[in-house]
Image (cartoon, rainbow, N blue to C red; front, top):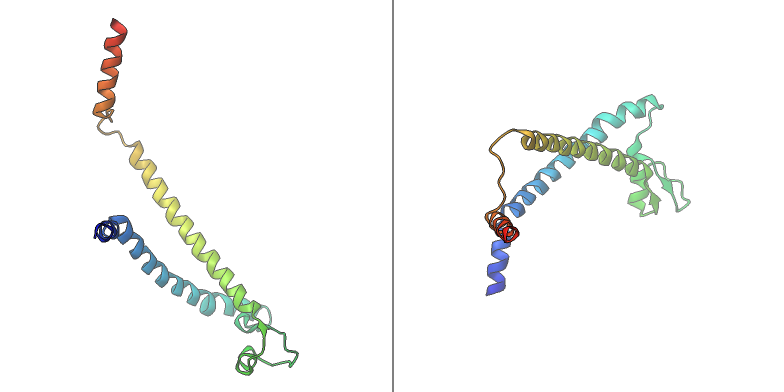
Length: 140
């Protein structure tokens, strides 16, 4: 029973709930970025490169020379889908850059908050008492 109570205390802490919200938002953001890459960024790049669809670029390992990736997959052929991999790399780079910008913004806000002149930060009560004891011992 003690273990269940400890788990409940852990699960109800703010950090765990915040992390769960972050994972859910991150999953939704990942879908948006995938759509951005597959539907908005890669088509113009493919057009510039002569009408290439990056999502359909593959290497057929079976030797049957399938015309499209869909045909090869329907036949169960072994393929290396490097076009899909390129799309995944671009999606990752976009997510990593966005995350970098968010963290950079949060860090700058923290620095501004720390730099604000506010109430002076006093030492904890036990440190003050220890310093007083030290000073009294020095006087003896």
